[in-house]
Length: 273
Length: 103
Image (cartoon, rainbow over all chains, first blue to last red; front, top):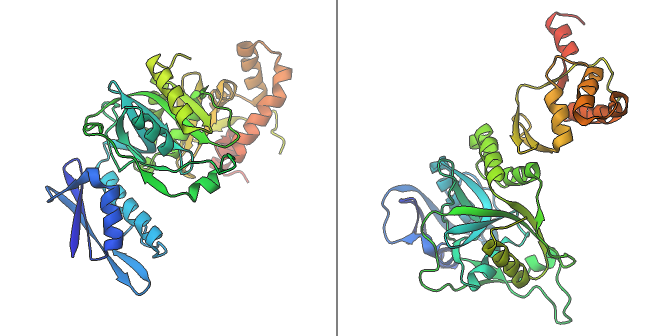
């Protein structure tokens, strides 16, 4: 039986099992967080095959997954993340991606399919430091972003042979490609937040940065806060204050490269709107 | 639903209100729903302190927005109706009646 130790803040979640077809991609997804041995083991999840299905013993949040390869991978990912979320109430956990330049991060916040990973990956391909692809913890004490570097992935080519851009639903069917980062490109230190971006990929989008109304920005952050129930009022107050001191924009876009360049230019100018 | 002019709207105590610059976010701890208010809606929300009727709220806001109170009445009623439907405010007259045991 193989065991993976996934570490965050010197605490580990162990995933044990003999189902290589799950553990290999899981190790790939969490490769920047893997450690050879636990320092402070939080929990162990065991994954096994039962007939045509996969079963995750110890799952308490997403135990009712469909047992398919994809469903079990999602279950394991969420179970791992939620153990760290529970263990770190001093952080607000956002469904977001982030990349940084000069120690100042741009946070891409939004639900599945909004194009967060595409923007983060394109920024990293242009030399930015990688912080996170999908989950961004923010310190309630300092306001800094804490890296949670799941392996960055981007969907291949959102355009067809006839050069038609794909709909968000079609894009979701595309295979994800791992973005290979150079040594030292993954940022391990905490980082100030320079801007909050709410991306929206659409083949019809007219790309531009649109200043988000403060209350709407706060509400979007709340909707993407994974541990809102843990903090409730404190989270509302905190995210409101974060929006007050941080420029927030909606970014409709259709070409990831162009949108990343817009972010690079705006970041260099300090997001002057 | 027509909001009566003598209604005395009061914010529900379990709704958390957080000002964000000139706007506001409301978070209802019971339904776990959040709402964003623009500056105008925020002014109406702030006026729902349980001390004023709808007409008095319009008179107060008339000074703030420099618009005759009569012209504000429709918009204020509409906002209050939405607050009421969403369970964010109550009518203080009803609360007083129920506390006093009036059917």
